Image (tube, rainbow, N blue to C red; front, side, top):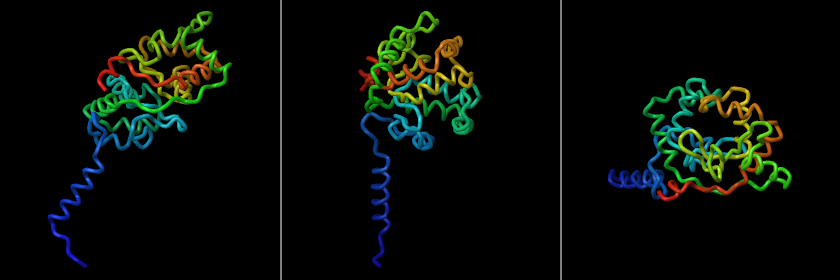
Length: 217
């Protein structure tokens, strides 16, 4: 067998590393900890709708950092995420939050629900149900549900399963950390049917970016 020179081995190694580490233009290099995140949330940060894993790409940096801390300290009760978050240092949390916040969201929306569900979900998302004290989703999460500031993340681009699960978590107290307990109060007033309707309608909306985010890309 022909022996391979040391120089050739280095050239091959460089080529392999370069092909593995190549990233789309404009994306920052992934921190090492992101490999664990990608197993559930995808290499593109868009989650896994079938499994209920949420989109991380393009969410506010401070929001992402806060959620990791909430998983670590039990403010959000999730055994899997607690195990992932607890070993992270403050620097690692900040690096992960910055990385996913800087990713450009992409992909399509879920199929439209039935007309009856769509009408009920749209009504709740855009106008609320004031007879029950339920404000419209867009009052806090902004027009198009694209998110407002650090405390009100985008709802578009998330799966119906995830949105529904989070409303239920706010309701039963397994998710906390919302400003002034707002989401807990709202969730308590929502019926299961309303939760399902608005989750399916939101999941079917086109993925749009806030003007400030879109301008960066």
